[in-house]
Length: 374
Image 1 (cartoon, rainbow, N blue to C red):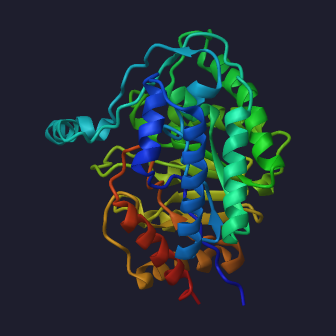
Image 2: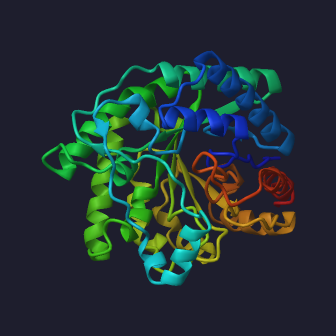
């Protein structure tokens, strides 16, 4: 009898000690590097332990050492300095009172988003090697058999760290793809699965490109996937996960591009595992896109629907998790479904809507729910 595996998108709540260290580094304050490294090692071990205890089959390091899933590259690659302009999502601009409330309540994370002002080159894989070692040691210690590590896609880097050096967007994407290639290959060579975070395939539609038509945006998104696939040329497809995202925030989301519009783009990525949102109210209906396009889902693709939400503190009932998961089992079969989360629980260091203890309660509900799937 096939047991459905469970996972999540990657980031998990960080402890205050970890957040303090990350922001000391972010703000260029003095800190003890040995103490920093020890804190990260201990925090990753605890994070993996909690995932295993919650019943998560495929674990991550929680992105513990990173300031965020995209902007961490500024610390590991040359060419970034200054600050990039902020672009509020178009849906929040439609509701200025709500946008002001978010800003006044501290609902917008504060961290540096430098521009690309020079050639993008790796500073070496030292930080990545520490992350890999921490995750693998924690997995061995707590009995986790399979793990994954997140990495930014060329497209999402271009979304948050905007170009002020390369002649064209295409040239910037190509440079990012070449620079990130070694990171991707190092993660897979370590025995971990690689997850590429790609909100540029959805969120950027209503952040940077809301003056374009959907067809024009799809062309841009396709160019992002081409750059990503180039960077993955030496990586086996069955070691790669891709996550599409419309923005991990509680908001109206009335400007989100439909999954149906992005379906072909998403399926064209060199990634066997496809992670996407199905729990929040703006995308819960879109499971029907996969049902209606079943013939267009390549036979080797594994669907990883988000069957728990990451923007509210409701803990989903296991029966609801089972119902959400069952829809995709009915489309592609049990062996091609892994149950996941809509997005991360700690997208930015020190910033997350969901209480840390509730985040793990949601992961426990995830595991309980998939056990009910027929």
